[in-house]
Amino acid sequence: MSIPVGRMDDILERYTPSPEHLISALQDIQEEFHYVPKEALEAACDHMGVSRSQGWAVVTFYKLFRLTPPGKHHLSICTGTTCYVNHSSKVVDTLKEEIGLNGGDDTSKDGLFTLEEFHCMGLCHMGPVMKVDDDYLGRLDPERAVEAVDALKEKEGAHHGNKED
Image 1 (cartoon, rainbow, N blue to C red):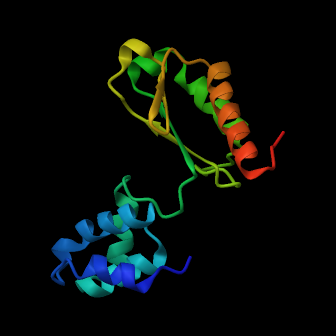
Image 2 (image 1 turned 45 degrees about the horizontal axis):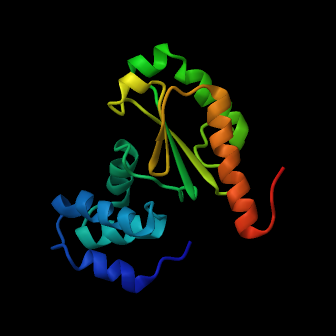
C-alpha cells in the first residue's frame, strides 16, 4: 500500500520529534489506516528519531497494533473462562474453517473477515459470545456463528453482485 504523504504529515506534525511520542503516533496512524503500514512505521520512526528495529519491536510487542489490513467485517470471539468452558473454542475452529483461515492468518484471503479471539467481553451470562462488527451474539454455538457469517457473505454478494457459494 502506498500511503498518502499528506495524511502521514498531518499525523506526525502533531508530535514533537521524540521517542516518547512513538506509541501515540502509531496509535493515530492505526486509527487513520486501520493498521500500521510499513511505510508509516518507517516514517514515524524517522520522525521520532527511533531506529526502525525499535519501532518494529514496539508494533510487534503490543497486540493492539495490526501490521496487515483488517477485513471488512470484524469477528471477535470471547475465549474468557466462562465462554471457554461453554465451548467457544469449537466456535473459533468452525469459523476459521468457514472463512478460510490458514495457519496464523487472522484475515480471510478475500479481505471480507478478520477473526480475533478476545479474552473477556464481560458478557459471561451470555457465553459464548461473538461480536460481529458492532453487534453481539450470545449463547453461541458453531451453527449460529456460521449463520451469522453466511448472512454477511450473502449481504456482500448481493452488494457486489457476485454472490459466493
